[in-house]
Length: 363
Image (cartoon, rainbow, N blue to C red; front, side):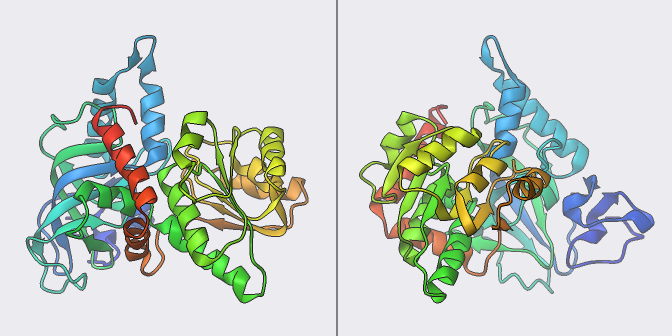
């Protein structure tokens, strides 16, 4: 670790670049030190699986898609190059990372994370700020899914978050849920805020059949929302949601098309109080504003969001809306998301089908 940087519970001592007076927090750093020796309050994790952020993986996959399809080997090599160069998995285009499953290998004597050696955990902080080293060349990954079998180690700082994996769920199912667990917790908080003011809100979720989208619909229903609209781009995704009870209306629309999205939501009862953007492509910022009622709320829960486009778009549309950045952390978010999945067989089946698709390279 850099000897000139004082130890920090936020991991600043692991920042290699920039250095000196320009040193930053790990997430915005150009390069981190992933050395396995831990500080007094750090934890070292033996890595088993990485789960790449959806926006990041989409960008990598599209970059390496040619006339013959996706070049999985090129995707794998780029991930290896990023980790080797940056000491963390942070896509330089999207800025996002993902999370991981691993086993606790060493715990510093002053760690406050409550972990013990041998605990199998999912990290609840982004790979974009987690010191990471890969030792197996990702030999067991074909580059064709977000889920990456891996060997290596990762470091958690003094102020960090990790959850011991529950014994009653498949570990990789738990990882898939925990990867997006900030979304349902925030949706619940927003819906409960409306209810506390005496108004039952309507909710639209763009990307409603995805991981964060389906959990957001489940949270809206659980919290007591009124009309729930799921927006999906393809009929096959609409079919996944039919019969689940997660949405009252399921509509087909490209969330990047302002007029197309507006027409679709209008056909499902009109503008909504709360719009949740769970689509992992850019260009959904202003269409989301068009389907949100004046005085409503838009939650941008996608790392593909251009927040300048959202802010300027709201101004240009004279949209009186509250815009929230989807923070990946809300107290109790992992437990809440897992309870939603445990309590709804259809929601659990959605996640299990996505896991099976990844196993067969169809995700």
